[in-house]
Amino acid sequence: MNELEVTWQRAIRVWWSLLWRGLLFGLLAGFIAGFVIGFVGAAAGVAVESRNTTSAIAGGIVGLPVGVWVVRTVLRKTFAEFRIALLTTEQ
Image 1 (tube, rainbow, N blue to C red):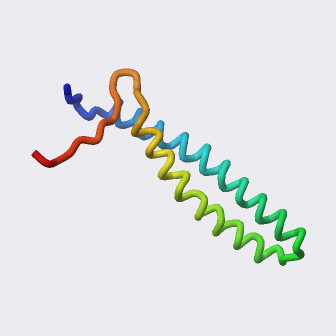
Image 2 (cartoon, rainbow, N blue to C red):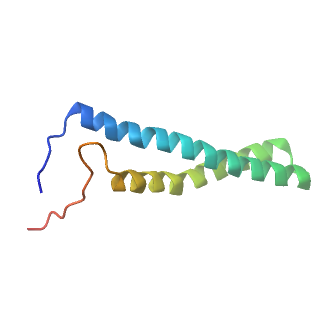
């Protein structure tokens, strides 16, 4: 296996891949969680402050597995000239 040098261009490519996926899918998942909690809370007559707090907490909780999924997706991605490989440190 040929090891490539870690250059700024390659680092930025991986960083951008993580960033846009994390933002897009994190915002989408947070929006859906917040919408559902807000809708159900409004239908149940829960106070706005409680719905806002609960929605924020739910968005954070939903964001954790989404973030891990994004990292896993990028680790499996093939970039133009390379892919990320996890290698054992044991000799």
